Image: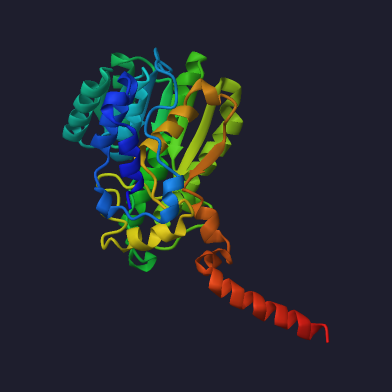
Length: 342
């Protein structure tokens, strides 16, 4: 059986594509690191194909500047690619300058857009300010800020040191707050609006063991988002989150699924029958930072193929019951009902 990635790729043969679609396919091949044999799917996945071409019109972000933390790899790089394709000038920031330089060159070669790589540790407020200053000097004041920098790993919570806890919370929660406060103050002072987007996770809704620093920090990011959406709307500023389920990119599961077992078991808990693709998140991100979503603020949008509601419903595991087993159980229930009427 062909995987969702294979089906999507077959549907996007280069000879049938326009310029924008060809760029999207090239970006998809660059961003997708795992081959199909490593990404398990369920039969129903064929009904949920991953659309990888941009859903917004060309030049949607022409004249706009976007700043993306954690923009040198994975989903951050994917969002940089998508926004650049759609006309934005992009500034990407993270700690490793070499990685940023390579990513910027790759995205520019693909899209032709200006991509500025700026090294900064989001845990350091002074470094964040310097990075924003560099963006302003070279590209202009950002109109869009995407908080994507993150840190996470699996561990029994009782094994965590104070430093391990602090590292994750500093990157995810404090880093998001530092960048949001820095740019937000600039927008307010200048009397201009803007849009923030933060990448969180579905387990903020119910909590999750073994990733408690991340769950706590990303829950804080979502609360920060709702709070500032209420407070800063009067300044023309809106804020939203995307809470993705499992999306595999380069290195994404190296600290979260070192054995590969989650891939095999986890896909069975996703009603859509497959993991997400980077382009699905980048399309949603582009929509949420565009004027097409100007009345959406203070929201966290789950992108997980219905995985969260499936795991939250105690009877949803009955989806594994076969028709023959249902026939047997129906007979047992009918028998019980008859006896109760005697």
